[in-house]
Length: 395
Image (cartoon, rainbow, N blue to C red):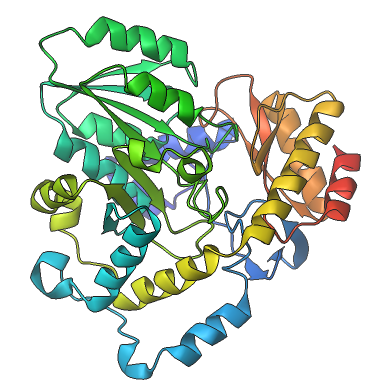
């Protein structure tokens, strides 16, 4: 019981938590916050400066001081509203919300858009609202924790299909589609997966969906928005299936340098969620200032083809280099895992790379399956080829 002081340990209700924390520490799995200072593409921890290869700032926009200066220059004080002080259904529906939704709707072929406080709020709210006991959810085995929690909060039956195995998904659809117990089947997946950096074949997924009348698609583009497609609208734009995905969701907290989540859908779905989605109805809306900043950034992102091309090129180069050194690397994106296997070796390699000036984190079970511990390299457009050559030499 070394983690907590004696005064706390006298409280019987805390002993169980203290034991579990000790157990996590002994396993090397205790999570802790790390104080850091970031400037541009660099991160400083305990006085040690490193190239940040663990950030989700994929286009370098969050680190761009000139963008902040421009935004504040263009936003007078009276429009810098720092709190909505209400849910959107009461007095929190500021013009900034409607403007951002209009921008999203215009970009996404005129489809309806709805905003959420975070990607987590979004994923734990939409599925429970749209599901009932006559709903079946078929989810990729590796979908994000927030989607798993959303599925568990719903009253739907759910089945997980093997990761990125669309043949398995089709078999399950054939098995369940004729079942009269289910009036609706929602297929839940991500376009780019956060741990392996691989992606779903969205064109094939849409082709499968079109064979089954009961099926709706729910696709999370958290790691693709801003990065993929001519205008950065994600893999759905890249593969020309924006109009075919019933529930197209994503977040602003990665490439878009802001905070919050969004849904692109049919107007009826939007109106239904406004009347049924608990995290939306019972939450204070985000500050209007955040919505204005997101809209400002979104307009910029639409034109950043050069940054997207650079990111794609360095990502492909790193994937090839990692495989050439004999490591398993399933990535087809800017998230590039170096799968080492053994947890202790992975931790040791991460420490070595950090000491050499590369901030890369080890990812171990239970976050990833057993024997698949890996270094997770998260590339941004601020990284150049020379950086990667130095890194690969150390792997």
